[in-house]
Length: 344
Image 1 (cartoon, rainbow, N blue to C red):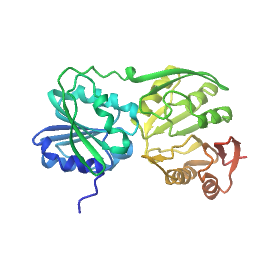
Image 2: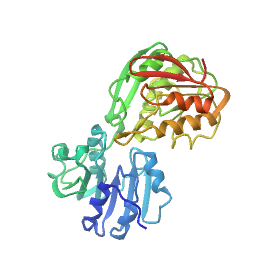
Image 3: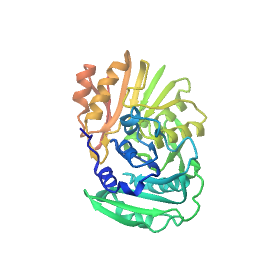
Image 4: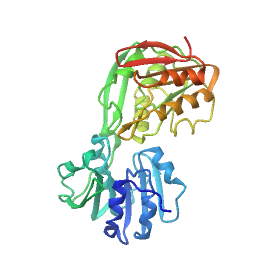
């Protein structure tokens, strides 16, 4: 049985003749097996996931003519006949993906862009830079659009620093520098949940996990106050992980930064787990990520370890924390957020 494809993937598949005998690069691919499906038409496929979950979904399907990567860019400068972009949910990521596509296309190479109507793809003709031809709408199906363009000029080289923003943040732990990248949560300012957490940041010790680290705000503040801490920063977003690296460098501190599917790629026990955890899966809110995170944290935390998170107060964290830690405490709260802990 053929695995179910997302709607954007289905509209690509029904226009698969566009890439007959082409070498194809797929950027920001989704959690299905479209790259595998396209091997029937193409000479080879290279797929770059910016979401670690999406990478893991297809990683074990790699064959000689299918290369799969996770990260914010490819580990090489290979050129392709066609580049397919899945229109991202974070609109600020669009220019970056277009630049990346242009960087990896052969002269006069083909750019294909697909996405759901509700996701903003209708605005793509205004977003494509002038080194591409004006995008033409080729198909409209499954509540999705498919556009096509050609590389007519020379795309700028990719320098990740060009896509970074930087701001100074005064915290109770001291002044820190935050570096962020396009497409990362709260890329231009500090969100209110993290602000509350920094105002009530606990003293920690030993090995610490910052889950869903984003741009590294929490880790940077912790290390500003306690530079002796050994911190693992994990996230599923490639741009967030790169932003976290930039933040650590800007503050002259060090952390272990890596992708993890929940806590699956962590391989140690922790003295503390701290987080402003994600609760969005695509465009819809979900509590399953939260429940799995709490359950896994209870297994990864030392018996006397500190579990300390900030979350939207409407999410059912209290019951879940009490279920797995046998107790739950609210350490601080506002009209929108609560800080939960396994210790009073």
